[in-house]
Amino acid sequence: MNPMELPLRKRAAALVRELKRLYPEAHCSLNFETPFQLLVATILSAQCTDARVNQVTPALFARFPDATTMANAELAELERLIQSTGFYHNKAKNLLTCARQLLDRHGGEVPANLDELVQLAGVGRKTANVILGNAFDIPGLPVDTHVTRLSHRLGLTAQQRPEAIERELCQLIPSKEWTRFGLRLIYHGRQVCTARTPSCATCTLNKWCPKRDVD
Image: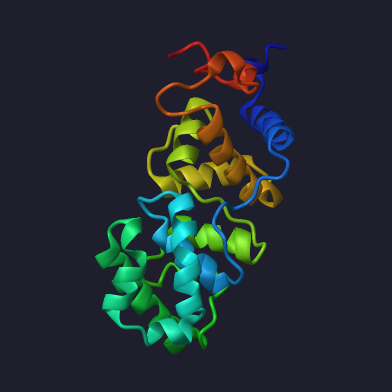
């Protein structure tokens, strides 16, 4: 049978297997040691590269290693430490508010619950899923621009809103694969299926991709 004629769920399973073969060691590219540090790094990663965030966080975490210390930070100092990540005024305000919320609501600890995470300043579903999957080993599928683009190109969903894309992908992919599947799509989007010039000719997902002859 032509791979493109497989039922969608079977095609999704084939993509999961191939991505696992391509990127067996896929992991979060943000550097962190605690759930709080991952929360902070993920907030900083909005509209910024992970590499840049990793340059900023060592000094930031040395000064403010946990919610208690960050909740008592001066806004101006936070802004200075994170300035190079962009949008630093809003990010600094979110970090300060988020740290205070953690103290007030969760005893200074990061909650391992999506509904509670998304109530924190600067945290949406994408950030919450990053934290769940990588800090707590709780399945979560963050939908960023890479995941959105590749899930469309691979014909896994036609949805446009991240929450709707997440819902459809989670229906197709076994929950134990959610976190690594999202990471592997990001790896593939950065290395092969790039936005401007996807390398269709050398892509090993080619036979399952309805867009393989486009571009």
